[in-house]
Image (cartoon, rainbow, N blue to C red; front, side):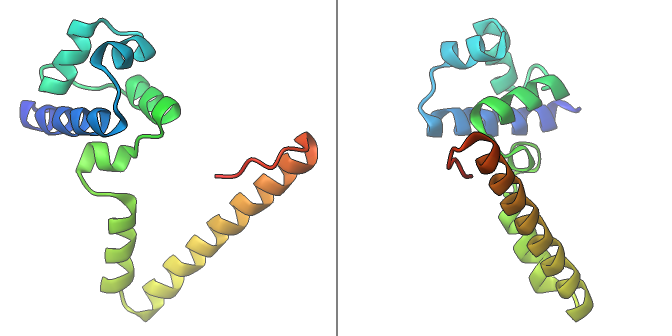
Length: 120
């Protein structure tokens, strides 16, 4: 990744961390990094690798699309729906509904197995 891309990702990472109200030390600790290394990520002096991206999403639920591109998934979906032709729009809506159905089935299966009612 170029320094410019690293810098943009670092700025978004910092923005998300501040929005979540997490201190630098706590974020670094949760990722298994030193504070110095984490600060370099936010300043764009180090590139974020796939393992860190996985941790950021797994621990904090950070939208990796936003972190990497600066666009939220919802913005991409809305643009695709609005800019596509009728056939593309039908395809995207069909995929979206299929995904919702899969999530619902998975949640119902987990609820049956665990007896819990935990959802998204």
